[in-house]
Image (cartoon, rainbow, N blue to C red):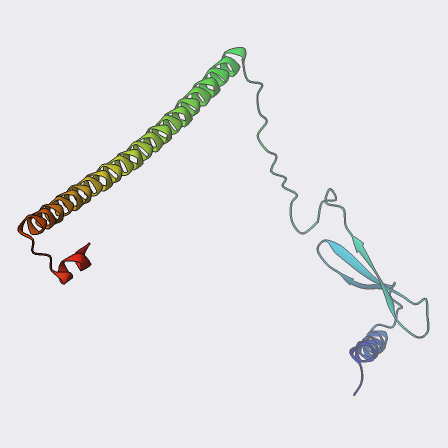
Length: 169
């Protein structure tokens, strides 16, 4: 299997041979001409082929097509009034943007206050409920204690002391 480089070199040699057979006059080293470049063959080494690619300058007009350069429209200098109007419009945009940012910050702060107030309210409600439950339990314990003490006093007055009664205390 031959490499692509040797294959191309052989094809170029065959092409050169064909061209020399067809044209009796020797041609310049020009290998090919394209619209915007020219390729010349260089015979500097016997072992390989070299080519020189010459690009045509863009200012050089081509004979096949007319040279048309589209120039950008020239901008006129803005007047002082125009500059002043642009500056005022920019200032208005800046102020509008600043107001919008301040409004968003105020809304954010208001939302934070609402969240904090709600959290504080929930905390206060929880504290109140817990305190009420504690008072209720304390009242029940106090009532039960008083009921037991009064039952014990009744038993002591009557002289009836049962053994199981002491296990409740």
